[in-house]
Image (tube, rainbow, N blue to C red; front, top):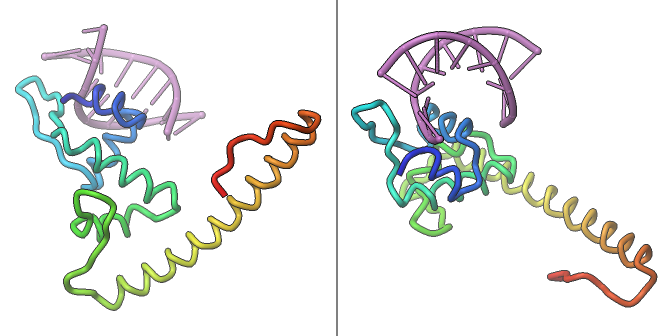
Length: 127
DNA sequence: TTTCTTACA
DNA sequence: TGTAAGAA
């Protein structure tokens, strides 16, 4: 599929998709006219990359764990390299802190909404 | 119309 | 990341 379609399927702007490709996060074939041709699988890959990026993981690290991403959301290292493990531990901690912050803000917003709406309806909250 | 590259804000 | 220009 072309970049526009991939963008439509993933919600990621073409600008970023080209950026991902530049950094080797995703790959694409080329049509005779120069247009990029992405595999169907790239849709899932882009979603995984987004998740990682949203979690605050730098492209540099993503490049390292990319070959360890299975078709789903598993991450495994056949041969753990100490440097990478250290980087991953740091990322894990950052994600933990970020998650706590997100939860905190979610509750604050949910609380505000409940009060503004008067009382009854408590919006859908997972936890 | 859509995409390409390069470059600036 | 968004947007612009010129070409295919």
